[in-house]
Length: 516
Image (cartoon, rainbow, N blue to C red; front, side):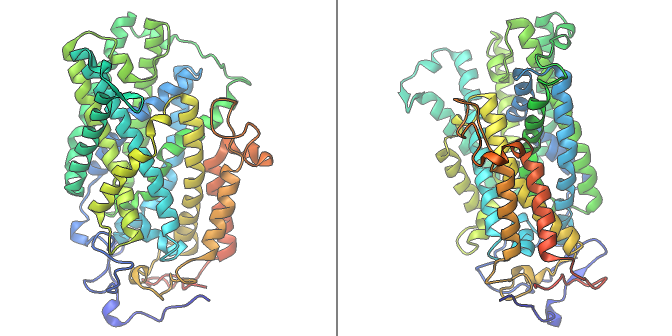
């Protein structure tokens, strides 16, 4: 049975401005199953992030080694620089849409992603999308930390020599494990100091990384004898029948790269000074910087092909070809800053909130961050970036399908069903309008199950290049696999709306639609 909450008592009435809503102190129920300090709405006086803060956040997150590997990986798969940049630019324009839609709830209500998910999935059911997002973030944290650790290991080995010849533990030199562990400790130390430290770090890290990428481009251009050889590398695919089978799964992979943030972007926009700040900041920060960084990475990768006769898609391995100590040290600092910048923002903040939502009484933001650091090692991230095929098609394709499905439900519920109107107190109240059936909304679960199967059921791998059967997990769904994120988002959105219907909301009311 579902329940409909009575109108909130006077002391629980929501204080609101035209585009921002605040929950008065003490209005949330004192129930540690669903409430702790990190999950409560951010007070209005602390919602102070500006357009620059959001733009800098995106610049800091976009300019990192894995996003470099995205673009350079497309060159390694046979695209020329124009095809690779076009693919990434289009993907980021597409993913910006759901990013802005889900981000709207942040400045308006001051709530993080797992609390927003309670409106559609239920107070308990929100743990389903939250844990999926947390698992993906933990894996990404491990990948980013491993890449950063390898970068430090490679560059230190080039500077000091003999670094790579240390005794092996688990198939890797112990010095590599040391770099990995120390790098992880540095990241957790920064995030442990809180969101304000993160904002200050992103503000100066963003321009520093851009300069580092430009320096690498200049270096390769000089080695190649100018920009001409970088631009002249031909496409191995052309624009015909060989291009499109690579383009569409690559496009979904590029979208999937930031599909994670399209879900939990309220974790950041909840600190926004208003809708204008988050809309302008994200629109300026995401598509422009990702396209610029893609252009830099494909030009550098094309340059490596011109200089060394092969496309070196890993910038660390490329930099290691130089014997200039100053250049190696500068690259080492750039790798550190770039990886820390994205990892603590994109892959620690989200699971910290998500895990806190699972057990608010036991887990706070800092505890969740520490758990993320542990899980990020257990998933063995070094396996996921071995080849461009495994990284782009298998890992990103699978993640994109699942996260697109969740995004479709959130957007349908917040924009179509509720028309952006939520009852803020009931998001924390057992038995309220978001309690549904014992804390779960069966309609959201059904839409997620169907959308998820359609999105990833056809996942397949070339023989010897991935974990899936060549004919797909569900063979008749194989044709949908190359469009996983789009299939998941569209199918779950439509099904959720059909199952739920469009609720009526009294204009100007702070109460959302009652559970049905």
